[in-house]
Image (cartoon, rainbow, N blue to C red; front, side):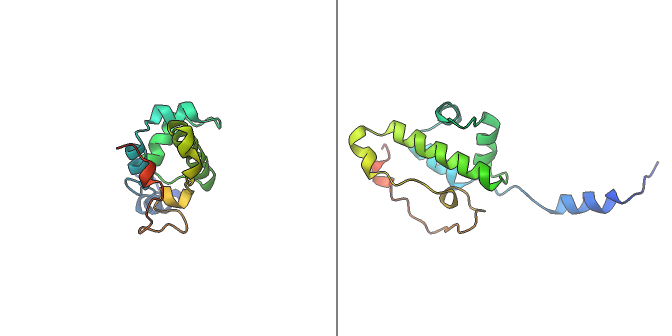
Length: 119
């Protein structure tokens, strides 16, 4: 049976709109710092969960609030990995550095913390 209604155009429009942005700079940074999803969740004081971290790494579009929460938690996790004498040299990340769909994202941005990363 074929159903008709006002929702038919809505579902077609939703299929055209994509909210998947592919692998994010966050994923590369977490790999370079040696931080796992579980470590990020454990570091979080803002009740970040595994599903949210996975969605952020894979590029599912997040709200600004959740992007900022992930960014704060990543900064905390990186600081926890650094020796005390190197913590003063760490430049905190901003959400526009971690998500390629964030307003103000610069694809040419170079990580100022590259020298602090483990080899």
